Length: 260
Image (cartoon, rainbow, N blue to C red; front, side):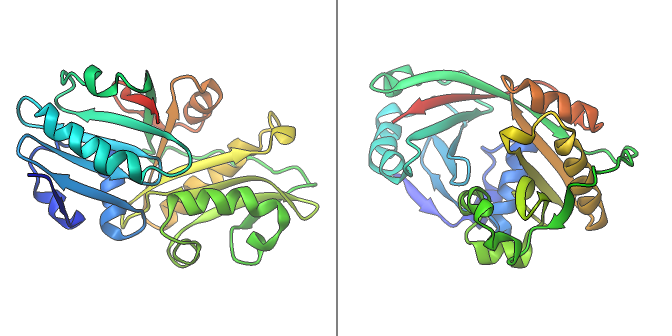
């Protein structure tokens, strides 16, 4: 029988192994700073990270395909938002065979790197005079150029109001226009994921490095360990994480991308 259970009960589910990246996600879910769901069945458990559309699957023996197929078709697929793509990540039992389940869909492997901040000395770089570093607050988010940030926050947080009261974010502005921003994602009492973006016309000017450095300093001031994830195909983000002195965690995080 498939049961949807309170997220708090997932902490006692032994099927979910210690995992730095999933630990970051679950801590934010438990803190109420992200949204998701938890299901438990006889041979598997799953957790849906609504923010990034990732379904984490863990099992302690052979997967009951008929039961999981019911879960996938009746619960997972109807719940997916308009982005129409889900990442399926297997925890521990990576040998589970899901090809029959995914055969009606377009699917492909995907992977990403995961980094953590280990308190290395941060660079003291200067921002060009035409730019200003600002806190992401309600006033700044009223600018027309803030719409992509508001959309991103709406994906990653339960509400804009919760982000403004609990979250953390910085932006670089030029002439009352936001040209780069960095927001807290998966925030909990001691951990924080970083989401960063630079408007294309302002890329390759060092703004991302300056912004990320300032955000790392802000996280440290609040006692938060910062985390950074990037696709294995995003070489610019990977190089920026290395330049910041972040420490890469062993191995790749493996996903399957499924277009619904």
